[in-house]
Length: 431
Image (cartoon, rainbow, N blue to C red; front, side, top):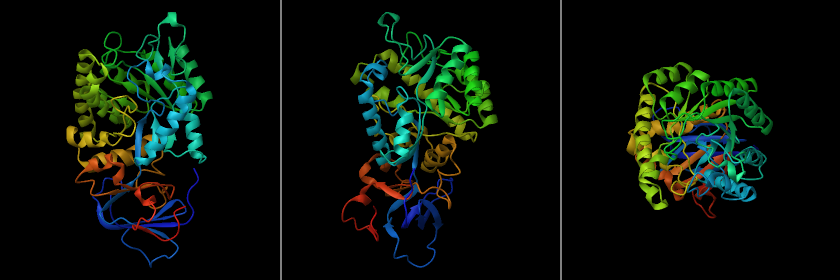
């Protein structure tokens, strides 16, 4: 991704650097040619060639990381909507719109949790080449699931298949072949479905396995051979255990964690993205969309189990990322920060813990902690400025009107700082 030329100074803000350290009021962040050059007290004389952003009364922090991003999901009201609701041409345009929205909400980086066809691979390329705005992305393309599993819902008599969304496998040989297809597609993460979900109570509920251990092991061996990472939708305890024993690089949800799974998780420092706000939204808004009581009850059980598992992981010093299944009718794109508020108000994490998960830990999951996730000299200048004190009210992130500046690679890409005549910004042109 092209970085900005020139210098930008963010002054008088309260800086949360993403490392977990307490915030520092009255700090400055200096950016030069797309990199962070200084974080701390005012250093040196004023620079007439620098653009200055007055962050008085604002929180300054690293750009957020949406660690479970589905760019091709849009207004999904049933599982079938994921693959046949719209033609691929329209889904591509929707994905670009979702990426732009994520950036405008303060998310400068994202890891795809699965995409129709391999739209996210090409969306990433368009973003990297400056053709479309959006977060720095890690792509995963189509997902892998055992035949008859959660993601295999089109009946055989329709003869329309599932290959646009998911590669269905029977046995380790087909699992290896599926990964090789994804290698050719150009993905970085291989997303699998070791378990079912509350959304499918009759066939593949949240205690059901959708892949065998041998299939999962074959996925990991093949993916690692080609330098790819593997993650999986893991609700059931046995599915989590199988994923960790097979060598998964991350776990999505990790809902029903037990002590054995936790020990395995910690021994390899495997990150988990719980994605819990989706469950709350399903419980609260599901009836509006015809969701059955049986499905809602399943989501309630999943929510309760997921909260306890997330607490276990955080208390034990494990790595949690923030992100969710946004793009459903009751959990739309643009609501990303509701996940952060949920973890403070419903789970009981501190705002600083949640913001660390959403910045440093997100960058760690992306494999780019040396470049992103914290405000430290030498890292890429992805910075977020938000009106107000996030440690007093993390829900400020939910309103785009509170986003003063979304800075990516040293350039202000979104926020009220771009408004004409904004007095908080002075100096050379932002463009």
